[in-house]
Length: 235
Image (cartoon, rainbow, N blue to C red):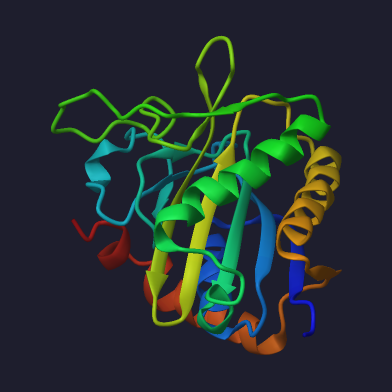
């Protein structure tokens, strides 16, 4: 049996709508699993954007901040200084990689925790459920859910994510906070992380850029969805 191929795509700063469109384009076009690591272009005020979950009311965003709505759920995430990554698993690979719906979030965060340990960032998986009963969605990094990554002593949330499954496969969008994420550190950690994914699934990887087909689809999705008021203020 052939070992599965993982694509590693590392991108520098991209506009907020483009980043979300690229994740969806890869979900719908890539024939292979993908680990995509990317950064966010600052706005006219020099600040990087916020992303909100698919069902979040857009009014939760501070009025002075730019934002984009994700295809996945979860809460508000500030991308001012984080390590943002996405894992895309095409539908035909889900069964062969043995990623169940119930276990995918925990499994991905265990892989992330093992990779963080290599750069001396030690974490534990959260086992408790949110206790807030507020009707207003809390920022993602204030309200940890089961299998988020926490600091072992302070219990502060370090990494969270959200997932979406559809007929194309699985999209996992994650963020790691709490470090000075320089571009060089992001690139180094991306390689560490892909090695751990490949070890978990006995896969091999190739580092490349998105294809012309994926680029064209990204531009279309950006123009027709992620850069529109209709999408970003849909609730």
